[in-house]
Every structure is written in structure tokens, then in C-alpha cells.
Image (cartoon, rainbow, N blue to C red):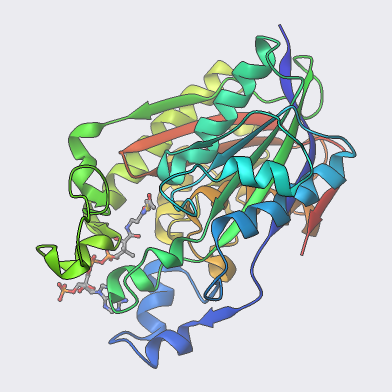
Length: 336
Ligand code: ACO
């Protein structure tokens, strides 16, 4: 059976920065609270008029250039499509010059990239695709209430991409079988209450019970608890499925939701700081873009090296979570 193998990687972060000082100037918060509770200092954010597609095209182009080949299929994992209809991926494919290839969006919140990795692996295993461009992109700050200190400090915008090709098990760059899960009984913990079919906006926004229902809302404390449990459980299962021991994993690449969550997961799994990848201080939580952006940035700065065994894990709204293993290949990575 064919395996998905990484042939190229790329990431793109919008140039505008929002520092903790920028946030404390307009919100009832402090640099000390943000740094100690989240580990974040800076985020990259889109300017008005820039959308998820724009980020995704930049990252996708870099992954294609790094791989030196085209894709048969484009998958966009995102929580913030440009519009509710149509899906965003077809426009990405067109703007990347990929013609009329199949292209679709995948929605699994911050776990979207792992769900996308599983889908891409399946498409390659069945022979439906020889190469898949998998992009995780979110302009998450467009969905966050700028006046809500509990969420406004957490998020940034970014896109990361992998070009996956058909290869063999055991090859450098081969992706292991992802382990995924969900729990819809906790759907209300992380949500945008309005704007979907349950609470459609038919008239002016003032018709809504609360106009703030169009913004992202999260029960942070409860989410924290489930995030640690689910990422730890799925990580153990993915490592076992790969036939590895946790001690043999060279780098833990976990969804960058919060530095304290990362520490809790790393402690639970026995990863000392030298084996953890992190960019949460410099980019914040970038939702579906978090994992591919971290992989690309770590490969570019040398903290992730050829041959490293990597454990990926993520958690988000749904609830949805997952984990996967891979070995980092000798491949080009384009980031700026
Ligand atoms: N500045 C100052 N005080 C604040 C801020 C802020 N920016 N935000 C919240 N507070 C206050 C709260 O009002 C509360 O005050 P109170 O005790 O007087 O009521 C106090 O700080 C503690 O609030 P908590 O929410 O309990 O704070 P906590 O330590 O849990 O940190 C945080 C909040 C950072 C959101 C954390 O819970 C977290 O990271 N949760 C998980 C997020 C996550 O994993 N998300 C992943 C999925 S996201 C997705 O799918 C898109």
C-alpha cells in the first residue's frame, strides 16, 4: 500500500504584528497575565481585506516550489473560509495554477490539519491521488471579538502547507496512520453560536439575540482540561500504531494553543524541553495553521532535522482531536 510522504513544506505569516503592549493599550489585561497564562508575546495578523485564501496561496506556493512538483488534489483545513459558500480551496487551486484539480475545504477546527493528513493519506493509499497539497490556513483574528480579552489575546493568523506524494512505508518523510477522535456532547465549549443553519442571519445583525454571537466564544478552563487529556491519549495511541516508544520520538509538535497546555502534555508524555517544538510566543494560536507552520518554521531554523521522528498532536472545537507520526525528510522548506 502506498504511503503519503512529505516532498516539500512551506509557511507564510502576514507581516503585521500585534504585541502584548498593543493589546494592553486597548484591553483590560497585562503583559504579565498574557505571558504567564498563555506564553504569548506577539502574533501575526491579517490587514483588513486579506483573507484565508490569500494566506493559503502564499503557503501553498512555497510548498509546491519546495517540492518542485504539482498536486493532483488540494485540501484546505480551515475554520475561517473566505465565504460560507463557495469553499475556498478551488480558488486556491486556480490561483496556484493547478487548473481544474479536485479541491475542497475540511472543517475540524484546530485539529483540521491532522484530519487533512488522514484524508490525504487515504487518497494516496487508494491511488486516487499521487500528490496532495495539504494546507492549514486560518485568518482566525477575523472571527474573534476584538473587545473580548479572554480570546483576543490568544489568536494569530497564518498558513502552512505540505506537499505529500505517494511513497513507501519506512521512507524518510513517510506519515504514519493518524489517530483521530471527536466528542460532540461538548460542542458548546468552543463555538461561534450564530451565522450557521441553526441561527442564520436573515436580516440586520441587530435581529440576533446577541450580535456578539457572531464571534468566536470559548470556555477556556474546561477546554484546557480536555485538550491535555485528549492530546495525551491520542499521542500514545499514534506512537503505539507506529511501533515506536515515546522515548524514541525526537520532536513533539503539538497544537500551539497555550504554553501551559504544551507543558502539561509534554509532562504527561515525558518530553523534556529540548524535544519540544514551539513557536507559541511568536505566533500565538493559529488554529488549523498551527501544526504545519510550526513544522516549517522548525525545519527552517534547524530545530527539526532530517531523520527526526516527529509526533504531531492537536485539539480543538467539535470537540475534535488527533495525533500522527512522521519522520522528517531531507526536503526543501520555504518560510518567510
Ligand atoms: N487578561 C486578564 N485577565 C483575563 C484575561 C486577560 N486577557 N482573560 C481572562 N482573564 C481573567 C478571567 O476573566 C478570569 O477572571 P475571574 O477569575 O475574575 O473570573 C481569570 O482571568 C481566569 O480566567 P480563566 O479563563 O479561568 O483563565 P485560564 O487560566 O484558564 O486561562 C485561557 C484562559 C488562556 C483561555 C486558557 O484557559 C486556555 O488556553 N484554554 C485552552 C484554549 C485551547 O486549548 N484552545 C484550543 C482550541 S481553540 C480552537 O479550536 C479554535
